[in-house]
Length: 273
Image (cartoon, rainbow, N blue to C red; front, top):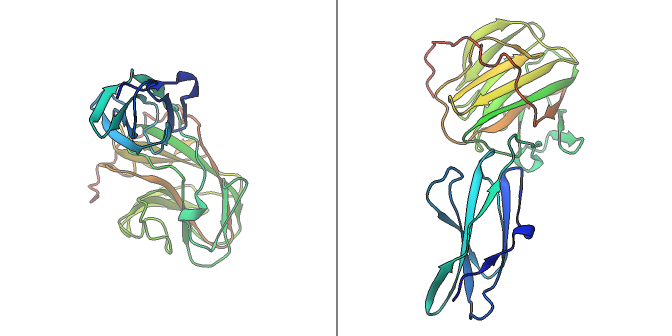
């Protein structure tokens, strides 16, 4: 078959997904289409869709990346020529919410899934709706309610982190847990780098995930809280928080990191990741 024709006005990019639409070749018999994207960095193309539809949305891409897309038709005689390329730019900064489907039932979500609370005494983990594997990403939690002697824990996690205990207790979570006076970093139940300074209602906790440098650091009220917390971070990480009774936090995304984010002193403690 001849090459399909991409319809630019029906193609779009939103957050970290792209939608590509095309027209069938007018004079060819077509049984299906193959849509291919490159890696968002000028690399090789890979197949992302094969089927009969003429529009496709691809989720879970990298932020701040230019993806090139192309499509070809096929029938029983073989595959046809590729269409012309179209380039689609994903969002520079990530907008996301909590994902209730990834959280245990004890968590209560509100405000369009940007606020979370927990009524039980045991810690429960809430995850963000987007995973990151490259780029620099910053988000904040504002403390709405904090009326108990507990330690909410903020950070990142793998998708299969244990959700029935404090974030950082297993090896799938990297966190800073904090009370009214001080904080610690925790991964795999190892506590390190106690830092003075705590939280109260109205405080903000910032999380800076720098996957260009493969490191994680934290802020309280836009000031660095301790040194760089974790390094050698590779793979896919989801924003995460754990909390229990007496705590409610709201997630704020698509914001720039504090201006001094390049000035956090390096911590030379070896972390086993």
